[in-house]
Structures are given as structure tokens and as C-alpha cells.
Image 1 (spheres, rainbow, N blue to C red):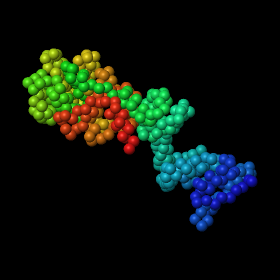
Image 2 (tube, rainbow, N blue to C red):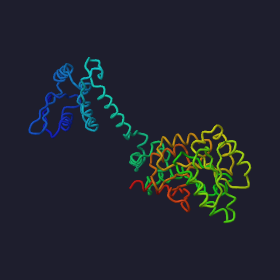
Image 3 (cartoon, helix red, strand yellow):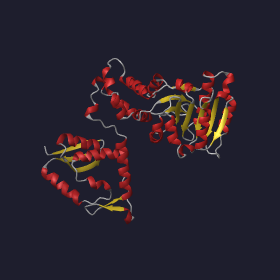
Image 4 (tube, rainbow, N blue to C red):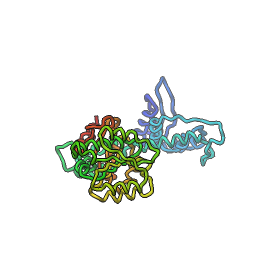
Length: 391
């Protein structure tokens, strides 16, 4: 049989049937709409194919669709399906400068073509593409795809693939959550209580000032007795023009001293003068982190076991913000405090980035309460958090 006629509900279904019967080299000779249905006549005869291609080369089109008109039926099917997903109609324009000339001296609309390519880019960007090496998860072959769909990166999933393979009776996804949590969680309660200096860095609006107050409250409750409040001081390291009223209010609430320092020389002198005498919590403003010499000073101090650098990172941070922030502080060994968890949630994509960059989460914090609202990260808690994100 060299020709085959099909009647279907739509042209896509009809062409699929033509392709199954006549093969991928078939061409469409005739298309009709009869009583609301599509009738298509196809052929795989070599003379029909040649004749059809010759006609298509001569036929003028007013849209970019003719760029694909010389393809075989297989490509036509793919392009129709793609256009159905993209759902982008061809637009025409009479403005001559808004056209691109193709190799056959025909014209396509620039705006339509640009929009079309953007749709293709977005379609490919959000696609889940597998390779043979990632399909060997024994009887749990689908776990990779499930985790990818939830937003975890291929790189971070691959890190724990062997551990997932070794277990038969445990949910492989749960194993993954615990592996990732174990990688990025680093409890820091003891170090906070024992450190002489606690730097709290973070972007404006990250909740670091509230975090400073929560850390101070925790230290007062677990390290000092009531008459030892003078052994703890909060330092506001910010430009002179900055408003530190919130920190002062927290200081009055907790009955601790709050000092304001603006220059790198002053903060260095203040730390040296109080070393061994007072426990210091340094709230570093976004502006002062760029002061010449500060980051080098922080990196040098971070080598001391009695000093800890805590980085306030809002749960709403996107992956690019996380990468940029962690790159800036990477040599000062920051312990991450996930803040504002009562306002937003951190997603699988961001957790993957934290895992890929070997980050350490030590503190979980909200933003609506100061006293008694600091939680230290535990891998079991974070694993359950990831599990709950499925729901």
C-alpha cells in the first residue's frame, strides 16, 4: 500500500496513524475537514514524496512554519506536538525592518521567531533529561526521576546513589533525604556557648539583628547567671548613619550592653581590648562587610576555635543568591542560620545548592519571636522537613 486515508478527531492523531501505517518517510498529500473531523491522505510512494516536496518548495508562507515544511512526516509530527505545548500562534507584521530574510528569499517575523526560540529555551530548561548512567537504580529506577521532578539537582542525587542502592527495605527517597541532611547539617550549640566572639553576617533584611538577639538570649539562659549579664556585649558594626534602634531595644529587653562601632580599626581594637573579658556578638551590617580589610580580618579570626562566623540566610533565598553569598564568605567557614522559616520555606533546588557547595546549616530560626525561639539544626529534623515537602 502506497497511499492511506485516515479520518480522526484532530490532525495530530491522523498523522500519527499515517506514520504508523506508512512509516516515517510518508508525506501528506491531502487534508480535509469533514463534519468536524480531519481527513488526511498520506503516501510513501517515491513519486508522491518527490512531487510533494517540489510543491512545498514553491509554496510561499507568511510565517516561520515553512522553515520546517521540507521535513519528513516524523519531523512534522514532532513540530506539531511542540507547537501544541508552546501554544504560540504565528504573528504577521507589515513593518519591513522587523523581518529576517531566510536562504530561500522568504521572510519571517522577527518578534515571532524570537518569542518562539524563548519558548523552546524554557521548554528545554524545565525538561527532565535522563542518560543511561542514571537509570541503574536496581528496583528503584524511578527514584532519580521523582527527586528531579521535586527540584533536587542531578549532581546532588548522584552523590548518594550508591547508598540508595544498598538498601532494600527502606524508602530510597527517605534515604536520600537523610543523606543530604547529614551532609549539610552541622550542630553548633556547644560552639556558640564556648566561643568568645560570634560574628553574625548577612544581607539587609536577612533577619541577622533578630538572630543576634536570639543568640544572646540563648547564651544568657544557658551560659551565664543573672548577675553575669555584663559579661555579654552586642556590637553593632555599621556605618555611623545607620539606625540601630532595633538592636538597642533588644539590648534593653535582654539587659545587655549594645556598642556601636563603624570602622574596621575600631572593631579590631575593641575585640582585642575585650578578649577574654567579655563574650561578644558582632552584628555586621551589609554595608560594612565591604569595608577594606574586613573580610580578610574575618577569615583570619575564623581560624581560631573560639570564634564562630554565623551567616544569616533567609529561607526565601534563591539559588543564585546562595551561590553569591557563600562565595563571598567561603574562606571564613560560615555556619548557616536559616532564618525567617516561619515566613517562607526553603525549596529542594536551594537545598541542592547548599549540598553542592558543602555548606553547613547550624541554626533554624523564625522571625516573630526573640526569646526561646532559636532551634539548632538536626539532620533528623531537616530530613523530615524535606519529606514533608512532598505533600
